[in-house]
Image (cartoon, rainbow, N blue to C red; front, side, top):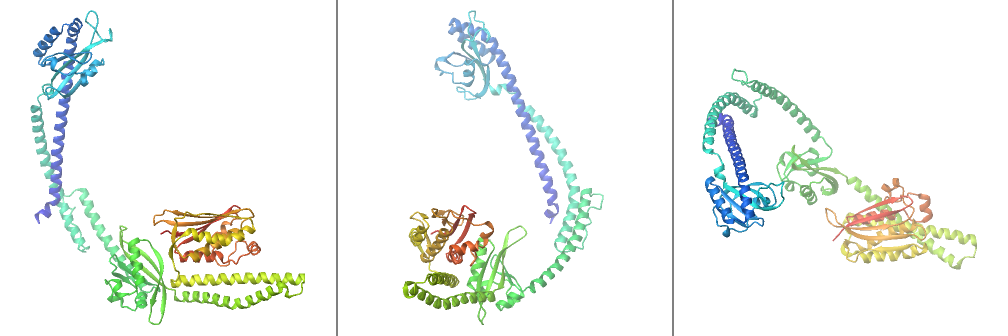
Length: 611
C-alpha cells in the first residue's frame, strides 16, 4: 500500500535525481574535453615556435651535407627540451633522429605530418606513434634551401627536407585530476541542494495528486456522484485545483453521457428488433453477439438462447458458413445469395456481409443482413421459362414457312418477279425470327446452366478455340473484304467451356464485322496480365468500325438493346449477341467490358482467370 501511495513521488524524484547526475557528468566531461583540446593547441603552438627556431641551423647543415653535426644538433636539442626531433630528406628518408638510429627507421614519407611538410605545408597531428606506440603530438614543417642557408617560403620554393618535433600527448595535457575533483565537489554540492529542493517540491505536489488518484479510482468503480477534495487546501497548486475541478466536471458530464447512451441503446434495440431484414452479428470467433427478431423467426431459433454460441452450431447452412469465413479472411464487404430449406420449400436469401470494426479500427467481427428474394427468383425463373416456351412454340411454324418458301424459290411457283420478291422478304424474315429464337434459347440455356452449376469447365489452350471462332466468321468477313487477324501465344490456357467461349468470340467478331467498313481489319488478341489477385487472360476483339457513343456503353449488354436501331436493323443481328456474351463470360466467373470512340472503332475485352 505504501508503494502505491508514494509511487508518483518516487518516480518523479528518482527521475530528477538521475537527470541531475547525468547533467553534472556531462558538464564535467565537456570541461575535461575542452581543457584537453586547449592544452593540445597550446602545446602545438609551442612546438611550432621551437621548430621555427631550429629550421635555420638545420637548413644550413642539410645544405652543407653535415649529417653528423645534424644528428648531434637533434640529440642535443631534443634532450634539453625532452622533445623528439626528426629530420628527413626530400624523399622522406630519415637523416637524423633524437631517439632512434636513422638507418633503422623506414621511409617516413608516408607519415601524414611528414608528407604535408614535404609538400610545403606546416602541420600539427595527434596520433599514435609508429615507434613508441603511444599517443603523440607531432609538428612538422618544410626545410627550404638557399645559398646562405637561411630561407623562407617566399625566397625559395625548393624543399630540401622536413623537420618534425614530437612529444607525448599526455605531457601536453594539463593535470586534470584537480579540475575533476573541483568539478565533482561543486557538482555534489549542487546535487545535494537540488535533491533537497526536489524532495520538498515533489512531496508537496504528490500528495494532492494521490488524493486525485483516489477520486479517479472511485470514478472507475462507477461512483460518479463522488467529488474530489484535492485542490482546496493550502498545499495545492493552481494546476491541481484546476485538475480537480475538471475531474468533477468530467464526472458530471460522463454521468450525463452514460444516461444518454443508455437511452439511445434502448432506442436502437427497439429499431433493431422491429427491422424487416434479418440481421446476425458475430465476433472474430464466429460467436453470435447480436440477432434480431426477424433473423430468429427466419431460422426458427430463440434469440435469448443463442447469444455467445458459434453460428455453425445454430444455423446449419454451409453457404452461410463459407461467406462468414470469406469475410473473416478477406475483410472486403460483398453481396451473395444462399438457399435456405424452410421445411415448406426452398427460400432464396440475398446476403450483404460486412466487417465490424471497433473504435480503433480493429476488426471485431462480421455482420450479415438477409433479404428474402424468393419471389424475385421465382419471377426470373418464370420469365426464363416463358422465353423458352414461346421460342419453342414459334420454331415449328417458322420452320414450316421456311420450307415452303424454299420449295417455291426452287421453281415450284410460276416465275413472277413480284411473287419472288415477296417470298424472299418472307424468307429473310423467317431467318431473322429463327435467329432470335436460337439466341433466346441459348441465352436461357446459359442462364439455367449457371444457376444450376452445370457449366462444364476444363483447362484448355485458347489458341484452338479462337482459331475455330475465326474460321466460322471468315466467310462473313470475306463478303465485306475484311481482314481477320489473330494474335494469341500458343502457351496461354484457361479453365473454360470451349463451346461456349467459342460462341462468345463468334458473337463479338460477327458484331465487329457487321459494324466495320469494307477493307477494315478485325483483330482478336489474347494476352496475360498480372494482377494483385492473380494472373488474368485477356481476350480483346478490336475493330475499326463506326464506334459507339458513350451514353450507350452502360446498357450495351442488355437484351435487345440497340445503340442505333435503324442501322442495326439494316445491318442485321438479333440484339441478343452481346447479352449472350455477357452470360457466357459470367459462366466462366469472368468479366466483359467495352471501350469505344465514336467514328474510330471499338474494343471488347473478356477477362478470365488464368490457370
